[in-house]
Image 1 (tube, one colour):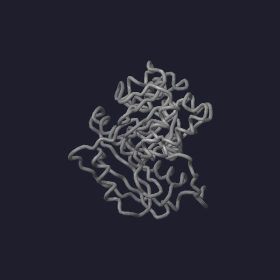
Image 2 (tube, rainbow, N blue to C red; image 1 turned 90 degrees about the vertical axis):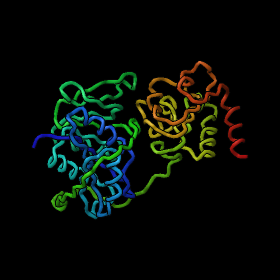
Image 3 (cartoon, one colour; image 1 turned 135 degrees about the horizontal axis):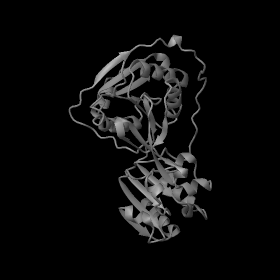
Image 4 (cartoon, rainbow, N blue to C red; image 1 turned 45 degrees about the vertical axis):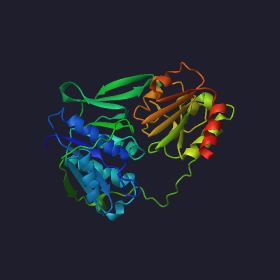
Length: 329
């Protein structure tokens, strides 16, 4: 069978909900397919036996033409052993021209496993996708620590890429018909090398920045002299997630999961509050899809102000306590 269309890994969370990055990838794939002779966009979901009707319909509204479902009660909860092998088999049974996977914890395991078993290449952590010469997938990703971006042409099939979360917007479309395909693969034939005995969720000090509505983000200058404590206090008052710049991460004030920018995460909150962040291009790339941006910085010439909806020039040790007082009223 000739490779055809775009196949997306339909990641499910522990509550059997589709990960937001899947909708973002479907929207982008619907755009890309018009450049490769209107081939279809397919989403492969691997999960337990539940009613997928709502999920199928919702994926259709974002541009999916087909949803392939492999279900078994033993597939509740992610297992690299099962999910990796099943996705690989679906890619072999319905060979696509392009495979797209979110650069999540799941995706970063599924993607290389699939690429190796399909004997193809993989471009990881992409920040943009396009169709280049000879209708080949053109993937853009940061390199040299985020100082440069590289455009990579994938010349093997299927052409594969993992994509950072929130770099694309999930855009609903009108009148898009979606077909459901319920496939069956005998998972008893899959050698079970991994068994999840217990799952203990880490108690994080901040909300997940990938899906936060409000993010309070700190640059290195805002972290020093106990400034990071004020940042967390403001975030708590706003029920917001805490994030920061690359330099704040490198100095140990935030974790890697909180870093925003080309070498960190791309976010799309409704409100982004940047405190002591100058606004380097690498950081701005990570907040380009934010709704509103408020910038607080002592340097009135900081580039962040050119990208902010509201700019406040001043000392954070004076400004943040006043903001907290107002929020307490």
